[in-house]
Image (cartoon, rainbow, N blue to C red; front, side):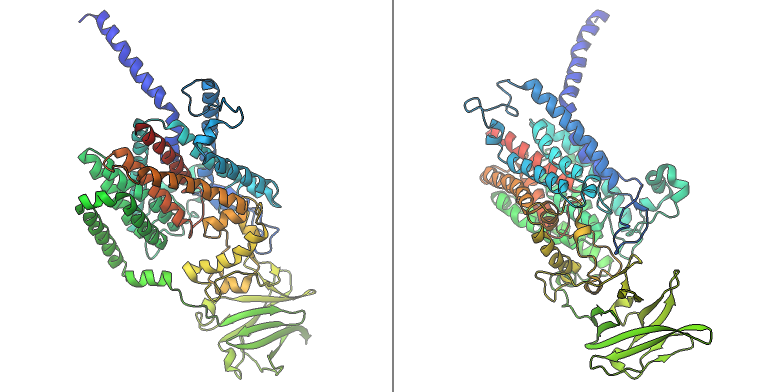
Length: 636
């Protein structure tokens, strides 16, 4: 063959390669959301701007590793998506074969896109309502910039919507799914490679290399101060790059149905083995996270899966049996290794102990403090006196009947009530603040005798007695209104308390909500006594631990209904489409897996919040599922 002939034959191959590359280029933002955004982990230092709140300290420094930069990368990708869609729609306007941007030429009013894709209407309404809720919020600055320990600003929420629409828009043929599956494979390999060592107590982020990657230029300055709450914990909790073990459970409920569907949809043995290994690895990791949400969510997904696979399961009964054996074996081995009884584990989640507080109330009066302790009332006041050139404190104690209670003072200045055993084992001590004022410290002995060793500090001011908050400031104590969960504050790992106090806030701001990313501000953080009793002694409640309460509170109930409508339209259309389909078709299996993943995520949302560590993948799966449904209908 001559050189001239070689040149002629090479040209078409190059053109073909470039053509394929250009054809798949629009998928790159989708691939980035799948395998880059969840992995972004970098140190971020910021000012929380909470100094005005009495329940927070005056600190001007806060730190984040897993949230802010994920949101930043997502916003950049969303802008790229929006620009591409706008250009592509304008370029294809008027083309007869354009099913995405065509208009209804008969009426000239409603674009045909809304008639054939009704889910777009509630999606757009949700985005508008979320933006309006932020715009009219009393703390809109947090909604636009993101808030402490959340960083889910309105721009992040709008990015979620953009990811959903763009994925639906660009995925137009079955071959596109192979690229997305490849990105998903990369994500799973990295997450499992991080999760398994965390399970074994060898967290990559605690290594020198891990710290260097996170801190960058700040490595020398902050390497010894970088701490991870779950690394090296007694149970070796797995959190991967997902911020918190709870979100590993949420991610697994979203991802595992897709992983298992890829096992069934793959035609090559090595692909089946890979996806099976990834499924088992993710299952082990999520058990290592300790997420109870996953167990119930995954069980619910399996029940829903029977709806789609009923005929296939009867023909291939060995497959579910083998899967159940593998998963039960992995689960049994894990629970045995951590010495936890699985039955008790589940029972404790469903039937928490009823509320039983030794300290049931604290009331601050102008002239005294009233404690309802151990079923009896104890009143306390003190006065600062000067005697013989020295300054001291004289206490006055009396019970609920007005009878004085004697006290003793040890050489160390510790005050006890030996003649009133009902108040035992309380102890009192007086300290001086840096400003020169006095405060009384109410403690206990032994440390676990009174609400897990919590110490209460009170001070006498010109406005009456006040409590020192966890932020080190003085405040009054308020009893927050609540709805439901009477005597069940500990339900679902203390979520009963949060939910019962969130519902009144949501109903008060039912129309447009409090504004995106403002939950922590509007939640009654000054309900100090019940918060402490419910297990939040030193924690700031930054989220409701329920995605639906989160959206309803921050964006309003109409926005919540729009959010639910998008998911409901998608799931109902999927059920209708796949109810009688042959599940031997790979794309049908993939479509069912995506729908089940969405079901798993929505179930997890009852116990966890929307956060940028997992939410982008949910919105992408909604868009991808809608695109797959369109492809399946086209093939019919």
